Every structure is written in structure tokens, then in C-alpha cells.
Length: 576
Image 1 (cartoon, rainbow, N blue to C red):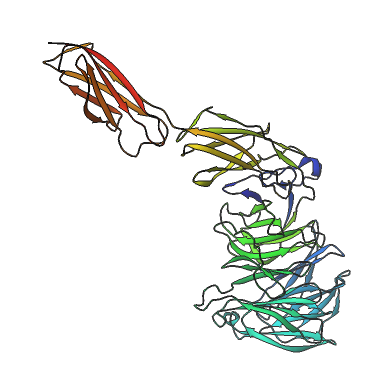
Image 2 (image 1 turned 45 degrees about the horizontal axis):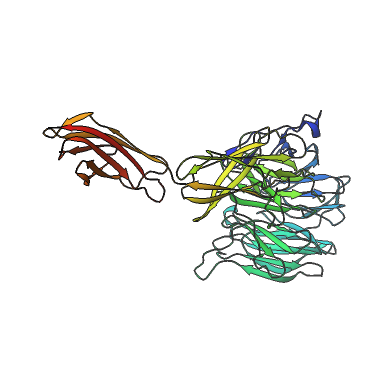
């Protein structure tokens, strides 16, 4: 596992102070002093269907779907919060959905012909109520003290994408139909106060899928808010991969493979006033989960190369704190976050993430521990810049300092800078902070006048954002120069030839410079024909003097909006 901050990958770092003697590798965001640890377990699966987190007994249950044949045997792997596998529960048939009772005493398991109930302390069967046959894989959720689950029967697995899914529940030990059903897979996700979310997977029989919020507290579920997303032309349809409900129940987040992470108001499923920033370019949303304490949201994705597959960030979308970004790539990590592949511990101290390889036949469990402590960062208000006189079109260096609390970072911190001038605000990118806290913002201002540089440190899950600081630089015109080479004497009969070079610093001139030429002799001053500077900056002045004795030739350029003018003179002794 590597953490990354675009545009380059960063190696993992070791937080020796916090984990001395444990042998654990700690992955750090670019500006981290302390970081998120990442414990990894290789799952004994070739398929994956569901995860449930037992906060009472600190156990993680993961299901191997084994969908495909009535003779397949599924399994449930049981892990500790530290990533150690302590048991494997074998099942008679394929196993899909998992859900825990409110008190975490019972684990409900969706199998082909039944909903099994296991004691979470002893891991033994408590009951095995029958259920309608399912050969596509169930979803299971608990609301109102009873499990709700999907049932989908087909003759062939190829029909699972569009076959009708029914929502059933167990009442008084037996199954009953709730009356709710629709085409294709139906995703179920639990929420607080006996609510749950139902979302429909995109399929050819449902080109405009829905998402709905249900109250499951009564004998049968009651639908509250519902929404479809496609417009009148059919564009914008939901491509649902996962859903999560905030701990306070006010927000629903959707992992939409077409639109990224959608954040909705639970009351009416309208778009929240503020949404999350887009996932990194090339990343497709696959999973989403809120931490149990409501502080963080995890956004999983399918991405390749150095593009992050997982972002862990503040759950408040208005918080600009930079996320921790994880890149999963290779035989030790998996290549992407699996759909429905994330759950948090109740206290928000651990994020359990299932990754898979590109082929989808190997799986890993990552246990991410976001740092619990944030440190202060301060940006100094004293700046220097060079050159002392900035000019348009020439490199400019603005130097400042950053101070931080906490242990020294293993990876360089970075600041963000902008320049504001008469043409608006321009993003200059990020700049690395050196070990001594100094940093240099590099720029090439292209406008004469005041340029105000704003430096920001946006923070991360370990460090609070710093207060922005500014520095104003007066940008002047770039200098130009003219150099002349003239003979000491010339005759009126042979004429005078003067060669020269015109040089302009700063931004390149839009056109070749045209130079004014004046001749001053004992008869007065007059203007000769102008000369145009060649591409290499050279030019030639030819003249037939009109009188003897000292004759001075003056060559000048008036300047423009970004360049000062310049002038040069040469005197020639003219004979007959």
C-alpha cells in the first residue's frame, strides 16, 4: 500500500514514535507527521459479497459468495480488529449478505435457501429460517429488530442482472414478502433509527434506477423519500455501487460509478448544499462509508497506476482539509477497492477496506487507522524575494517559512500558492517545504504592477490547516539594450555601415523590434529609415553621410507595455 498526493506517488513511511517495536508499516500523506497505519490480511477467497463489523466483540466478518452453482460451499472468514483470522465458518450453500443485530449478538447470513443466524460469541448456529431460493446473491440488513433480505431466482446466472429481486423479511421465525420488488440487483444499507436505504443497480430493464429510504420499524417497511436521477433525455442515471448513511441519519452518500460520490439529504434525497470534491481523474467510485463517530468519510474507487483508490477525509464537505490518499497496486495490496468493500468501527478508529485485483479473483482486507491527533501548522509572515526588482516575464522566487508542531515528518510537507494581479488569481501549484521549514515559490509574472502571492497550507488528517499569508511584489518592465559596432572613420563616397544587437529580457516580443535611427552632424539632426531587428537580434544601419567631420548615429527603441525602451549611439569621423 502506498499513499499518494497527486501528481506523484509517495513511499510509505514509518512512524517510529507511535509504533516503536510493533513492526508495523505506517503510510503517510505528503504532509503527515503521524499517519494512518495499514494492516493487511490476504483473504482466503476467490469471490467476495459482504462485510459486517461487530464492535462489541471486535470482530470483522467477511463472506465468500461462491455464487454459481447449487453445489458450491460458501464461507465466512472472521478476523480481529488487528487483522488476525481467528475462524472460518463453513456454510452448506453459497453465502452472500451479512448483517448484525442491534446488540451484535446475532450475525444474519444470506444463503441459497435460508437466512442463517449465528451466535457472535460462540460462532455457532442459533437458527436457520428458510427463505425463498436465491442464486444471484442476497443483500441483508437489520431494521426494527428483524432482518430484511433480497431474494432473486433465475435459471441462469446471466439473468441475474435483470431478474426481479424481492425484498423479504423474517417475522416470527418465518419468511414473508414485503411487497417491494424491482428489476435487477437491489442494494440494502442500514441506517440509524430502524431506517434503511434501498438502491437499484443500473441494468437494461431499469435504465433509470432509484434510491429510496425506508422505515423498517413496523411490521412491514414504509417507503419515505425516493429519487431517480436521469433527466428527460435519459442522461445522468444512477450507476450505484454502494450507499452509506451518516451516523446522525441526515445524509446519504452514494458511490455512483458515473457521477462519483453523491451526497444527499436523507429527508427528501435532494442534493446536499455542499458536495464532496470530485474523485481524482481516472478513478471510478466503488464504495463509500461514514465513520461511526461522524468525523470521516471514506471514498473507495477503482483506479489504475498512481491514481488513488481510497480517500479518507472529513465527513463535512465544507472542511478543506486535504484527504489521506491511498494507492493500491500490486500483488501485496490488490488494485482497487471492491464494491460494497468498506465499513468503519463504531468509534471511527479503524476503516476496514476490501480490495481486489484486476481479475476480481483475489481479495485483501486492509485495516486503516486514521491518526487521532492533529497538530498545528503556522506560516511565517516574513518573506523575501529575488531578484529584488521583479520584472515581467522573468523568473521570480518568493521565499517563506513554515513551522509545525509534533514529530518531524518523514515525507516533505507542501504549500500551495496563488498569484493575484490585475488579470485575476492564478494557481501556481504546490511547493515542497525543506527540512528547515523554508520553501520557495517559483513564478514568472507576466504583468506589470503589483502581484500578491498567497501561500496556503491546507492541512491533512494529521495537521490542521494554517492561516494563509500574503506577500506583494511590485513587478516592473523588463530591460532592453542596444549594442552598436561602428567604424572609427568612413568616407562620404563609400558610406557608413553600423552593425548592432538588440536584446530584450522578460517576455518575448510579439513582433520583431523596429528601431528608430537618427543622424546628427554639423548640419543638424535628421531621422533615417528605421531598421527591423532580425530573429537573432542583429541589425544593420547603412548611410551615405551628407557632410564631413564627426557624425553621430543614434539607434533607439521606445519600449512597450512590458519592456523599457533603450538607446545607443556611435560617432564616426566622416571624410570626403
